Image 1 (cartoon, one colour):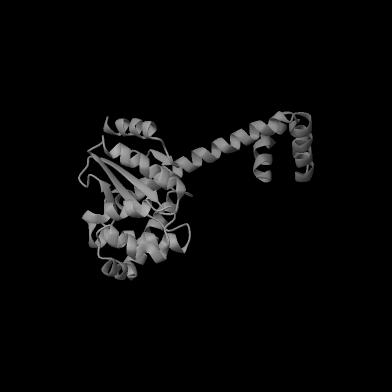
Image 2 (tube, rainbow, N blue to C red; image 1 turned 135 degrees about the vertical axis):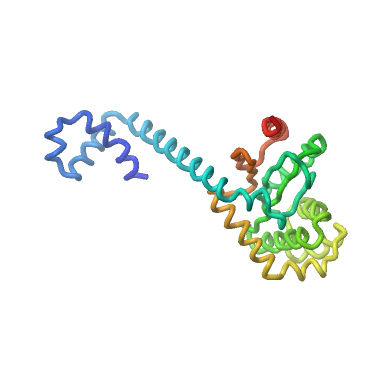
Length: 242
């Protein structure tokens, strides 16, 4: 950050120095002048930080847009993903989540409310296990359900989300109560295919520059990092329809 700030400030300081002085000045002397300028006009540092943040935001958005285009098929047309809502819905949304993420639990309640009035909403779930071993096992179980019993995926998803904290030891019981064959599901969850799928989701998550759950991604490039409220989500969904 220090060197990047100096890089931003350098042109400002250079404007105040004669060309001859700049040519004869060592790098160390020039940096000293920059520091002196900061001491004399500390607001320059604020302006430099604002500029750095804006540069970062633009670069991140550009990379996200690039990756969204490159990964579009993986995001929106991968039939190994679990789906909640309308599997044939015309309004699509990708949902990166972890079953032990408290913000995901909050967003899940919002999604349940929104689904009551959005019959065309298709939520493509990208299960992740980024919050420890229990999260990994829960995600693998959900991915196994998406593979073995896709029509029952939503029931298991909600059963897992209803737990304050999912523990691996309780997964069989949760699956049974959700109406699935826990024994068969756990066997599938331990397979290489499911391990590969989980890694694929994590790779996609990282490729998009995401660093936390929940995260919602729409086909037009709209990204919602974190838990959004019902009103805000409904507004975005209306925009997606137009």
